Structure formats: C-alpha cells, structure tokens
Length: 217
Image 1 (cartoon, rainbow, N blue to C red):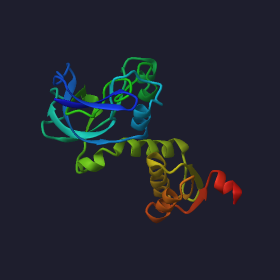
Image 2: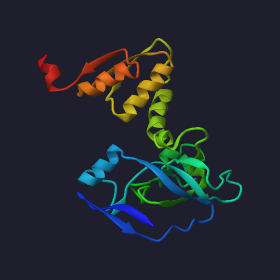
Image 3: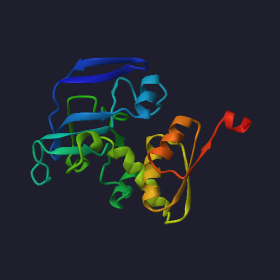
Image 4: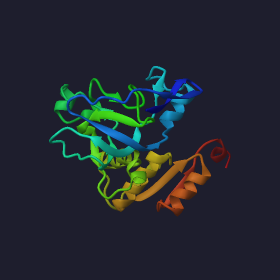
C-alpha cells in the first residue's frame, strides 16, 4: 500500500509498505479523508518536538471499515471517524475515564504513524461509526470535539460573555458551541479575514484585532 511520509523537515516521500495486520481487538480502516492540521505543518517545518522522523502524519481522519473484531459493533464498509489519541486503558487516569491524561498516551501522526496512508490498524474503541455524517465532515470531528470539550469544561451558560482567543479551526469550534449555549461571543485574532468569517458565518457578536497594528490604532 502507499503512504505519504515526512522523511525529515521539508521533505515528503510516497512509499510502499506492507498492509497492516490487525492485532486482537483492532479494526482495519481504509482511510478516505485526512485533514491537514497545524501540527502537520509543524512536523513538516521541523517545529514539532514530540516526534522522531521519519513519520507518517495525519490525525484528522475518516474512512470505512475493512475488518473489525467480533463484538465491536463495527461492520465492513461502515463509515467511521477515528479518535487519534491511543490510551493504555490501565493507568490511573484511564481507570478514572481521563484517557486524555493517559501516562502512555500515543497520538496518531505524532508518536506513531498516522493516517496519510491507505490502511490503518487501530484499537476498535478508537473507531467510531459516523452515522449520517459525510466522510468530509467526519474528518473534522476531532478538532470540533476539542472546541466542544473546552466549552463544556468552561461551564458557560446562556447570556454569559465569552472571549475566544484565536479563530483557527479549534477557535471556530469553540465559537460554534459557545453560541449554541446562547452566549455573547467576542473573538480576538491577528487576521482580519478570519475575524470577518467568524462574524459572517459563525455568528460571533464582536471581534478584536490583536497584534502590533491594533496597538498602533
């Protein structure tokens, strides 16, 4: 199968490698969509300190099931999205349900090879049915979920005022879910085009321009 690998900062190659053999409890997923995250840019530019080269990037993923373990609830051909944070399931954090704080957490495309490949073998618990969500949209669930999680952790309520600093994809997700709770959302960013998008498309109530130009104004 083909994979796109970052050999070293600034260098990508398409390589052939054997198809993965799923271990017990793993599903085999054919990757159909891959989002390009800021993390991937950092890896390509050499600014990501948490990995070793060469590395197959990609953690915003959707695809279809090739094979799945019995009892997983997954079926061949089923559209799915991937939770790219692989936890051990045994440490204290995992036992408390805080898998994001796993002592041995491994992130696809960073600590281990990710989804810029044709097939990926993953723990079945990290493969989630997409239901009626399209493959395009399912590949965005990862960063949308981060914004949703931040809003939930913040415990914000209707009519409260919220400041979102940065209007990249995760910031946009925070805006969407904060507005869904009926809050007044102000967005701060250095880029006028992104700020305009948050007003026109996401319903932000107010924007603030950050940076040197804003200080001069």
